[in-house]
Image (cartoon, rainbow, N blue to C red; front, side, top):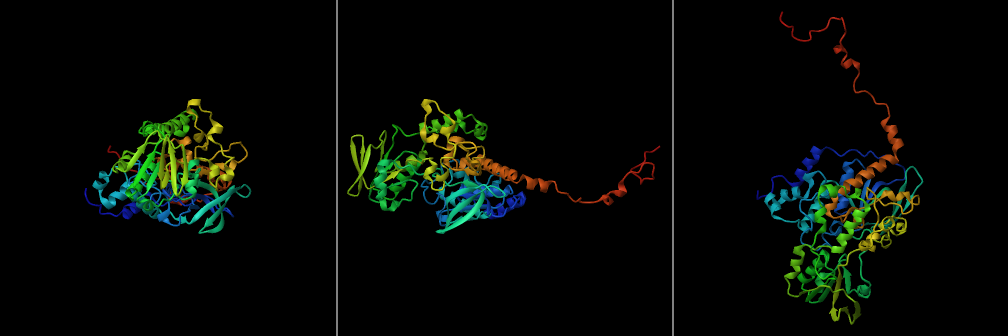
Length: 492
């Protein structure tokens, strides 16, 4: 099929939702002083997935907030993401869950045809952003843009435990309350972009930035640019700089060769993937440490993208020994060479240190970390993994010291800080199929048990009959009485 389908994506999706039936009415009891049952921090792909899944689970009172001013600035796909195509398989389950008519394939084929979908190997980045905006519209997911969570504190008195949220809404302070929090807030959601100390001066003077920051690539035209790091985001940033006319781009990798071994592939089958949280800590740690030891593999097309440029230069086994700012340039020392750059881009990843997130700083010392729970063998020691939160089965925070902060279980983490626990970068598309339902099940269970007395009252109430005995009185058999003829009489 080479032409778009006759039905529009809206029509097909609306028909699928009609056949699915209306979403259940919210079964969560309302309580005075509680504004929301769940607040989702982050309106991107996983925030949208959670909103839809909670809706289908009958959990009402859900609010999605995002600090971005509007949809065009929300998430990463139209801002900090710089790849041409997503790095994952095109047929993975996304925010649609089991409703395939709401998935990317159905949406794309309805506009471009089945042959067009078959022709793409991975999903174009801008098409994915367009799809997510459509998905939010068709599922009725309203995102409150311009709303930032500043801090929160638990409120343990009252009918049910909850949180008091200190928000900034379009620059104005606001206080709201919620029973549950989901942090679906992207790659820096459990920490901050990691910038090497030797770049601090350059960053402060506007001569360096992290790949997670907004970068004016057009301003790099004719400039000498350095990129530190060799993961996918580093190669993507290098490519955009070259495509915007940079005079030269030098990419510096610590390793002697580029990481090219996708170790997660060998454990991507359902039995292992679906039951990962049930694995012993030692096994989960081994896989996380192995992944970090071998390095993040950039897609081949990301590498090929920069190799098209003769002014791209790759430095292997080349960690920076020092850097300083001189006369408006960053002067770097690498082995015995000195380089002068107009701008430096740090593709150096993110920390998982909760204290670096303003809204999480107050709970950083209360949360159980992997280093509190597991002592790895010496050859697998990894301090950054050790700082990652040790999450429960619903991706909830756990107490470092039992009894000190039981309310942590009402905070669910859905960002890469959970990698050590789940074996996947939470927030990426591959994590949605298994872990969004896990979080929703836990939230549903917790909300039910917290109001169990009310639900017991509701479920033990008297129920009026749908009909009385008069409906069937004439059909009751009366022994010895003359009965209506019940069927054919056998021939003698």
